[in-house]
Length: 433
Ligand SMILES: [Zn+2]
Image (cartoon, rainbow, N blue to C red; front, side):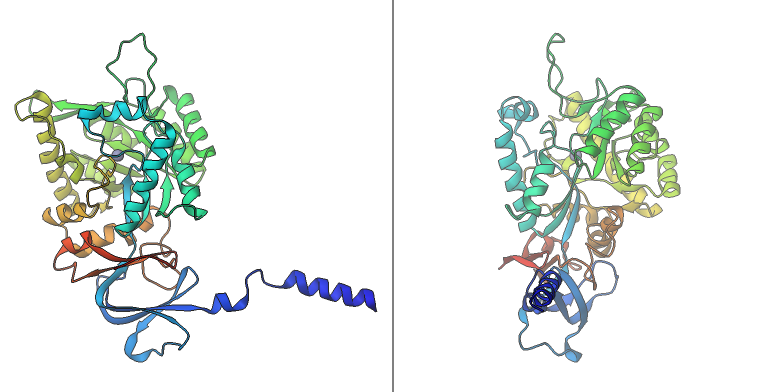
């Protein structure tokens, strides 16, 4: 009998839930004056959002919903509530390096990795402060697998930061990435992993996937200049055969490939090789746009970064910098009109993290995108690209409770998104003004 009791107690103990029941039952309720849910084109007013744990449980009209007396109430009835924003092109390991202080090269040659990790920690916090609860960070620029470590530090709760989709080292070819311009006798470190030939290219992808890459980033073009006929010319890097080895390997792991591609041969190889997203796409010709539509390729234009740091006007670099921006505007407008799937991305890191991330929205709207479309490019549309539809970028039952608020109406003035006043990530309030 004594033994039976012991056995019964043991069975009971094993079946006890790890969490006490009362912590699970605590509900947080957000009162939203105006709700943009990230998916619907329609705005709703006077809504309540029920959050249990780190997930949204239900969304309903405030007038017809009873709020439990023990619920934690957050009053955003004077504000516009949106899903946490997603920036799909960032570099937390870059800080908008000042050329006067050695620029990109000094970051790799002089900065200890711990210093770079400390700066990346600040970049991650700045993104979250501004309401960006998810980043697709597209390579560490010489900081190896540092992004995997920062992602772990965030997920384990050591540092605050957005959800990270990381791509580790990125891959380019010999002659396809900096550091460059040094004596040829020197074996200089590179900002990306260099691979030549389909075997090396596939191996680089395997290594990066093995070490935690959520996405593989490939450079399909490198240098660019103004051509004989005033057109933007880009130096291509990988062949289609090399790229196909990377894409085939990555897709086999159930992951995707983001391709940096400006124009011309490299852009077309990127599409022929099956890249999932085109980054920058400065000069999209009609054939490229048609192929992107046919293949369902995502377009992450990153407009703003091409308006920073232009070289002096009448120099070759200055002419190229201005042509990049003007061609980009035309490409963006053509892609928008054609219905290419445009996703919000900034290239932060190429821009200092002290700058507002949301400035990209302003340029997208200036170039003809509706504010609602621009918001969806940084919410539900990005979530589909990231294979996280229904989980992030939407205020809907079952999604993670990543929720932000701004005062005023961002559909009337998109600049409102530069002043995010409330940030919740994973059900935890990070910022409340
Ligand atoms: Zn970039």
